[in-house]
Length: 338
Image (spheres, rainbow, N blue to C red):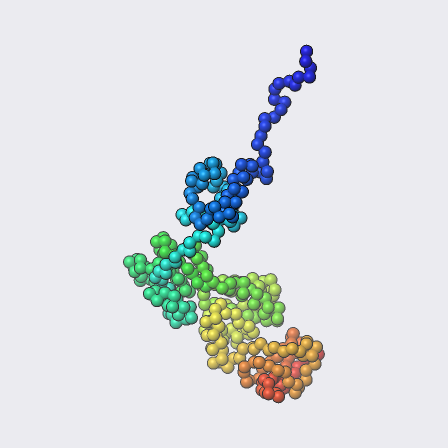
């Protein structure tokens, strides 16, 4: 009896095809053959259809599609539904058709810089201030709508979305329907500004709200909760800022540049002067040692006396003028020790 003969059965596992990194050699060879065809110039411009390429390389279409997708992920190819597969950088440039646009704007913003740029970009476009009476037949002539209004009805935006009209909301946060939005990050900016003001010693801040969906008051409130629990916030309209200032507000945060200009003009008319930024190259210990009669170079464009406060420890009153041919501020009074 031959005892050296190996027993028959399932002792030896069936032979399997080796894989490297989870991919078969066949797939890897196909991918490298495609890469070589592209780099050598055998495949240029728009590649043939997947079935045609599959027959050409003697593989099934599914394997070929995955190989093309891998090469596209590496940046060697450009793939898009409806256009096909192109060698990177060889796809034809799409022709952009400039349609007719409609802009929604508040009555006081129809001549803003953004509105003027809109007219330049779309000479045949139209700016409307009231959308409540617009008929559907009127909207059919426009290819897109730009919403610059501060209180555009959500129902109107819904009608545009239902009709598949592209909508771009500018500086407002859509709260009901998903539309494209282009805006400055007011919330982050307001939060950072409030933080600096609170740390700088302001314990009563006026927040001017003009855009219902801007979220600036809430951002300032979050900063107050984190950096100054005793900070008082006065959320008000742009025409009520003077009342807030008389109540003790020492800083004002506006939610738009237009409102800031309006508030600044109203305060100037009421003879309330805003603090200016004073730049100097002097070190802190040098500033603390200033005395009456000393001069500081200054670029502040105003002529009335100014108050300079240094970290809440010392306050100066200075008058602006010219010293040795340069704009300067001369210290007239000082309070607080060094």
